[in-house]
Length: 86
Image (cartoon, rainbow, N blue to C red):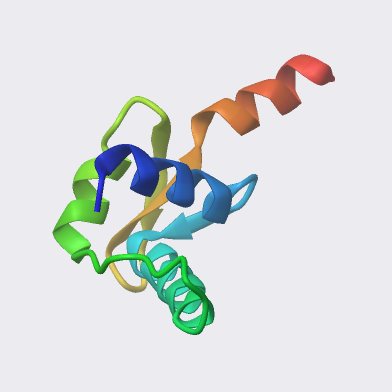
């Protein structure tokens, strides 16, 4: 899958939510299963690909979940727009 397309899909999944990498992958897999019946099938991806893309400047690590020891991510641009609107 093209990196640019996957970045836009991750942005659409995150929107203004805060999620872990696993939650993002689950949402993307749900989208894939919905698209299986249509002509717009999407390719598969790995957790390493998702983790590398989350380190992009479009996303921001906001902390760690202490129970599961995983990073929590958010969409930097959406949250910045909300702060500026206030």
